[in-house]
Image (cartoon, rainbow, N blue to C red):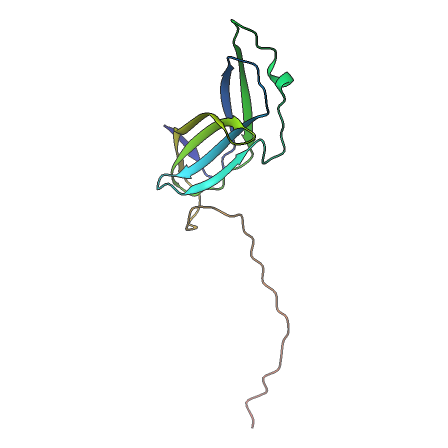
Length: 140
């Protein structure tokens, strides 16, 4: 169980082992869920236009295993305080699953502000006077 603080950045690393040559594009994905099951965010390499070809994974021959890591950097997670889970997946482009790890990492977020809901938005408020009108001096 990990504890992070408001608007943290993180890197998610997915380690993999190839036992046989890659015949089609591999898609790596992540999903972040609130503890109540609400999907907060999900993406994958295919959605984001990141392509890994079989050459990217090296030659796999009989009796060998190729080990590697795919990394997803997230600049800022704007979730409010709460409990969350990470899912990771590896599948073919057509959706055929190779591996899906549901709730593989549990983490908590702490701190933040007094906003309500699940997501903290960076806001800015302004005020301006559009016009002034005389209301008279009280005489009818």
